[in-house]
Length: 568
Picture (cartoon, rainbow, N blue to C red):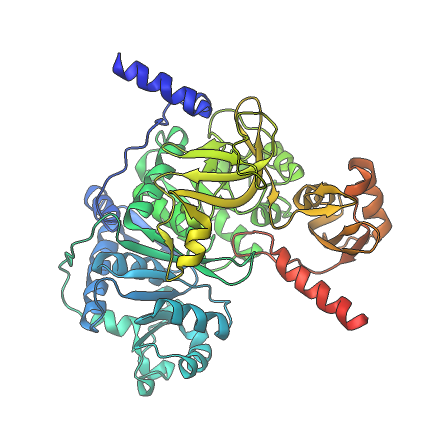
């Protein structure tokens, strides 16, 4: 009777639970062990299964586990201690996987860094986290030279991506020209370490595990501090959510297509860590280059899981070879996040019988929070329902009052659960602004429908007011994206003497297409209220997006305001 009462109470407090797939628990059981144990457990269960494929190079889970232990000891031999921060400035590659799990194994804290960051951005992050080491690759040696002139980093470890490609030979500190700098070569450092014994630091669930810098959409980056408990929760919640689809696949067949950047928490947890937990072979590519992507997909009979962003899926399904490859059969399951999936892209995926699902999260929630059921109801435009053990409220930004009990009422998403970060690294002011009594204020505006499926409207900071009406640029983006000639689109608010603000659209056309601004504006007039129609259109080769596809409207606004100031 107690259990029945608990479930009845839960369903009243969290009405969305009724939308879960049958295999998904209402309350997630999250282990309390350190995050590195996820690799150890899989290596023990499936030692001879391939863990990684990289341009034909492979290693088993047991080989990966033993290499991780050796490299963890190598890091410790440099005098780096538990709790020290280590930067990972790498694209997807075996060295990233080895380094990530090695840092966790010896008790260090991973600081994810985008290889495209400028020296100024890297300097800020290095100083903020007080890095003790940086692991990066040969293409960034010149950038590292400049960075180390700005800030002290005690240990620099350099690898060459092709060291793990068959037939490419092995680089050395001498061949890379780093020996005289006092830097270390990844492979040589690993080879010089003979101990395979696993370090055994005492790690508590609340200890920091990963620092993921965020804030590219809003300004100064902030380091979201994710604990071991957060990372383990993210791995297990993701496993629970996809179990309906993945569990029937024999472990021997499980493979994941890994081109989503590992240096972002979305790719790191939802692709790399997911693969480790589910004993799936990671098919790794360092970048999304469409011809290489299509060639690689074609090499494999089936791919169990592909975590992607809309821009990736758009490029794949519109590729001339897409139909002949029978992608619906090849991809068992595709997860899409980072940005909303436009309805026209969803139609294309469904027309190809691609089994897809969308979700929404942020760095502060281990890239997960709300997601469409894998097997259950999927509503176009919806991000789905909250994860197990996750509570979501909608709060009126002006009054602070809860509005989620009323369907279709827009409010800010406020969330609490096992994946919510501990705070921002060395930034108590921003932590206090966004974390209040354990509730994370996300800045995302949304509503829920009669079935408790949630729909993102826009970022609160992106909303504009035109002629007294609220306009959400993401809605207009989707309308423009639906134009048959358009590949991508992004709208921002610009000053308007009469309306206060009006929309300007930045449009990327499909290859070979031509279009006039009036054609885009007319298209919008047919589908939108007059106050939502862009007043200006600019055609560009690309629009700024983060590595996981989020719209970086701030960059467009800054460019536009600078242009207008120069023309005054």
